[in-house]
Length: 225
Image 1 (cartoon, rainbow, N blue to C red):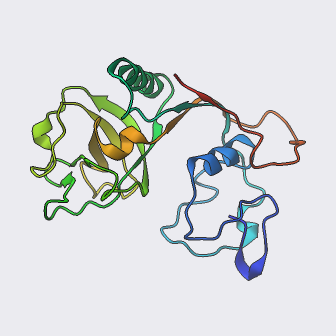
Image 2: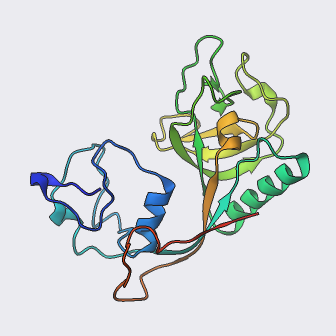
C-alpha cells in the first residue's frame, strides 16, 4: 500500500489503499525486491483492514526473498496433450517447490441452479465464467486425480474425476479444515494463469537495489511450459 495513517505516503509502495485488493504480480514484486516478507512475530496478523502508522512497517527483519517464479497458462482451451502438460507442470511445482497461486469464484452460495459449491464435501466446480467470475485467490497445495465427480454439487458436476486440493484464507472453520477441492475442469481455475515460486532465499543477499522502478522490473516471470 502507498497510503498510511495521517496521509503519510510510502514512496516505494504501489498506488493502492486499504480494501482495494492486489494481485500476484504486486505481492511477488514486494517479495522479490527485498521489502518483505517479515516474520509473524515482528508484525502479527490482524483481522482488519485499518490504515496503520507507516512506522509499523519499518526496520523489520526480511525473512525471505523470491529469486525465480514460474507462470502456468490457463489450460481450459488447450488440446488434451497441452492441457495434460500444464497440469503435470503445476503438480511438479507443488511437489518440488510448494504451493501455486490460483484464482477462483469466491461465492460459496449453495442454493439454486447456480450453485457451484457442495458444502458437505467442500467441493467446488463452476461451469462457466459468465455467472461465476474470478474474484478470489487461493493456493493449490495438492491434488487428487481420483476425486469423484459425485462429490460436486448435484446441479453442477464436471465430466471427469480429479480435483486440486486448495487452501483458502477463510480459516479452518471453512470447508475441510480450511481446505476445499476444486475440479480440474472448474471454469475459473482452468482458464486463469497460475504462478509458483521455484527459488527463494531466507534473507536478502544485497544491501541496495539500484533500479529506477523498484516495484516492477526487479522481478521476472517465465512461462512454465
